[in-house]
Amino acid sequence: MKFFAPLVLFFLAQSASASDAIPQEIDLYKLGQRIYGQGTDSCLSCHGIDGAGTDKSDVDLRDPSSWKSVIYENALRSEDSEVPVGSVTKAIIALGAKDWNEENFTIFREHWDDTIRERAGITEPAQPFDEEMVGINGPARQAHEKFIIRSYRKAGLRRPTAKQIEDTMAVAVLTYVNKVFAKSID
Image 1 (cartoon, rainbow, N blue to C red):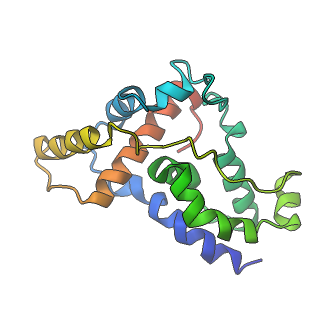
Image 2: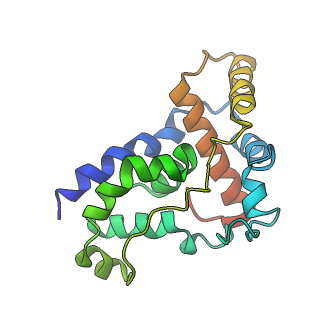
């Protein structure tokens, strides 16, 4: 199954190195807190103030081992140890479930065979992510992008590219979730 690794790493690589490219001057915790809680379709609206989920989502942010992104990532890691911790989760946050499913799930499902599932101790077939999960692509995204651009400028940094803004947002949300709820995913 080594041919599987390049396909998976294609979509993981974009998010995996995201935190390396974010300048230290950017306070990822505070930015993540802002993104998590601000806006009508924010993370807070589905995951709740305590991360335990709401009637919109039963994903418990306090237990990363129950997150589909972590389960899939661990299964991928059982096949290829180079899959970076947090890379699938960052990609889901950045793209939202609908876009991730469209870009990656077909490839992922084709290679989600019994061997990978057995090695990872998973009995269920791969399922796409719930497309209600918008990640950073909610109505407040534009306001968050402007905030990030201002933050870079205040720190004396060059204007970030669209990809840097997306990466900064995804890493910031995951940083906040880890520190407040999960405390175990990079």
